[in-house]
Structure formats: structure tokens, C-alpha cells
Image (cartoon, rainbow, N blue to C red):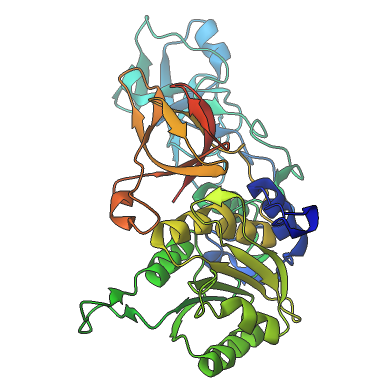
Length: 409
């Protein structure tokens, strides 16, 4: 066989990552009410509206007083007033007086500390401190501006908004914020053998499960605009339906029809619709036949192998990271890595994706315990796994303790 007749070298997963990143468009930004932004990716800087805390804040129920009076020997204080959280700050009128305060209140003027209610006794409007109670300036007081000063940057573009981040935005006084628009996603299965759950199934048919798994993975990551469809292996129907989705959606995720069989019609149909193939096939197992392309209008197309283990792995390994990048998400943590809990041997000269369960011992040490499947059609074995690790090509035996990248489902 001559050099020109040899099969082209397959892409590595890292090379596929780079090509996907190069050809995936950044989604537009939208301005939304804060109540609709949970899980969204921030597209603007969030700054502190005021000092945080915006005043000297009381952190314990008790009495506020001037600590100098304690140092001068006073242990009995007349309660001059009561101040709750949200009340305008009162002013201490006498060094021998105190003001009853509640957690969250602004520290009254003339006071520099709070004595907890458990450390005082009250009788006839007089608060008394036991001789053993020690008092220091600014005890039980959260000083103004110790968390952040007005105008300081709290959040940067690319941050995914969880509950803590939403709280920061609200504290900054922003009722609306600019975030990445949710992509319109179409999850499409192909194949004549697939039958919907709940419908009668013949011995030679299989249930349509991949599309539901893909949609669930997307929705669990916060993607709500997910449409589902199934198209039979009929060229006219396939072309008509794919044309519609390419014109109306941002990303298409297809399952099935990308291998080398006579009825694997997806690549040819996409080509007829003007979708440019960026790559087809990656040097990996499972999921080698993965196809990726871009439509003239910018829609990204991931055509995944139809075997369910391949589908699940390709979604977590390629589709979800690509969607996060399209939203402008900047990860706050490095990729998750974990050590093998037992030795494992990779046979093929391909990057190997190994399903694992994450176990933690009594000392808190985590390890990846292999849960290999009986092939890329054995999705039953994935039950109880946490994800998969990416092992370099074989043939090679990897020892217990070998550290690999972990991808969670």
C-alpha cells in the first residue's frame, strides 16, 4: 500500500476540542430580570453598589455600649432604647447607658462593641455584666467595608450564576443583568429500529433512549430550550427535517447514522444541506465515528454514534463543554482529576474513555473505580457510575494511583 492509499490519521480528542472551539460561535447576550438568571453565564462586570457591610453591623443580640466605660469600671448600664435590624441608628446619650440591639442592626452612635444577651442580666431596665465577662472594642461587630469597598469588582464576565453569585448581584442592586442567551437546541435521533417508550415493540426493535439521555444531560446543565425529534432512515424526510432545524436552531445534536453503513445517511444529507464537515472520526474508544460540522447560518452540528455508551460519553466530553464555551463560560476551577483506585490496562491504540464510580475512603481520599461496559451498546452498566476518565492510548497498563481527567455525566 502506498502512502497516498493509507487512511488519514485520525484526530486526537485534544485536536477535536481545538477544532470545535474554533468553529463554535459565541451566543449573543440578553438582558434579563435577575429572577430568570439562575444558571446563566454572566456577560458584564458586577461591582459593589456600596461598602459591604454598608454600616458597622451588629452580629449578636445583646446590648451596644462604649467599651471605655467597661475599662473605667462600670458593670451596670441603663438601657436607653431598643434598636432592631432596619431601624435608623440611635445615639448613646450617656457613657453609663446602653442600647438593646438585634442581630443585623446598625451599631448605634457612640457605641463600639456589643455584649451578647447570654452574658448579661436585666432587672428594672438595668443591664448588668458579671465580673468575668471581658469586653473588647468592636467585639460582635462586623465593621463597615471589611468585605468589599464600594465599586470593587465582585463578579467577572464568564461566571456561571449559582445561588451565591445571584445573591451578590442582588446585593449590588442590579434588577437586570446581561447574560448569554440560552441556545436553541435540537436533539434528534435517527433510525428505523427505534420505538418510543410506551409503544408496542417487536423483538427486532429497540427503545428510543439516546435522545432522552441527551436531553436530560442538557437540562441538568441548565439548558431549557431543548427540542426532541426522531427521523426515520428515509433520505427525503431526513433532509426536510434537518433543513428545518438548521434554519431555526443554534445547535443540533444527532444520535445515529454516522458510521459507514448503507443507511448511515446523516453525513451525506448534511453535506447536501451545505453543512461543512469540520471533522469525522476521532482516535478514541468508544465514540470514534463522531462527526462535527457547521451550517451556512452558523448552527453547530454534533452527529454522535448511535451506540448508547458512545452517545453518553460524546455528550459529556464534547457537546457540554462546547455549549459552555459558546456561552462565554470561564471555568472557575481547573478540570477535575482523580487517581485510579485499581490498575487498568488499555488495549487499543486509541484514547480510552473508562466509565468509573468515584469512591471515598475513611480518610477522605477519592479514587476512580473502573466500571467497564460490555461494549458501546451496554448502557445498563453505566447505572451507578459517576462519569468516565480519559486514559491515553494503549497498549499500556496503568497502575493504581495513575491520575486522569474525570468527566462527570
